[in-house]
Image (cartoon, rainbow, N blue to C red; front, side, top):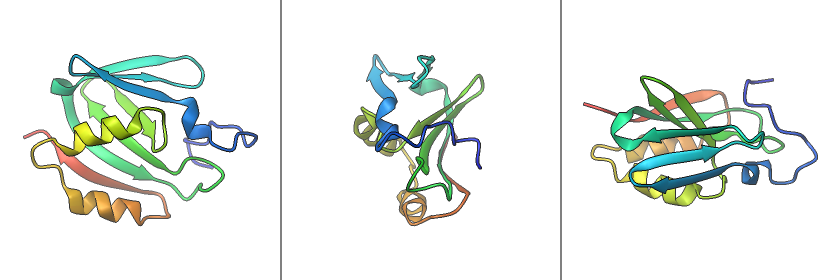
Length: 117
């Protein structure tokens, strides 16, 4: 089992237990256990899509936001994820081809979609 298997099998849509929002150029994440994190867009060093072979019972696609101080794992399907995706995909130099490739993955992989120059 991967490190992402922190969801119970009883939920039909566990991704919706996560909430992500954007305000004043900051990403705010609330996890199912109540933990809260935030990251300023200016502090992002790298954006990855991490995929696992855990689907469809568990979330298996994660936006991974990496800064010097923290890493945010945001499952695809989290509440607010579409707005986050739009904002991230507008970053200059975002690699749409890597993103498309990640959406086809059904195994444990990492796809670097953006790095700070």
